[in-house]
Amino acid sequence: MKKQIRKLVGVAILLTAAAASGQIAHQVQVTVPFSFMAGGKVSPAGQYKVEFDYTRDLLTLSSDNFKTFLLTTTTVHSGETRSYLRFHRFGGEWFLQTVTFDGVAQNVPIGKHQREIMIASKSSSGPPLIADIAVH
Image (spheres, rainbow, N blue to C red):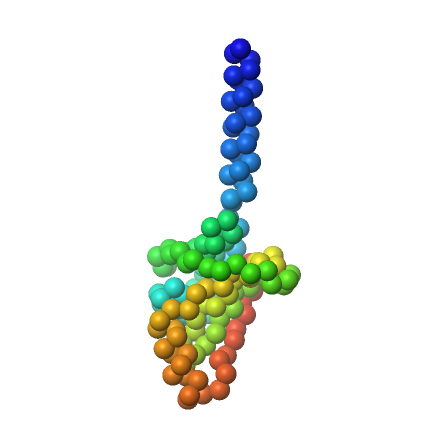
């Protein structure tokens, strides 16, 4: 009976470990040469760690010089083979739009402030500038 309980406990531990490994987030680093907005927060230029948690549609941005914050995202399959962060510039401000990693894109939702700037810049200038910054 003790052997069966040990085996059962062992199998339960293995299944728990397997389930947890499926939830491990992917982490990359990127150097952003300009300040930008994401999730309603302004982030300074600098080196960032970006973590993707596809199981919960979460994106985490962290930096030694800036407080870590989480963004809920929408996951889409892009088919891209490269990994990068896409920023759009409206008016004088850059906004994080999409993070793509191994063919999966995480779209960052548009906040109220970004929407206001987008509307204002459409009437005063042409299409937004786009910058793709490769991750490493």
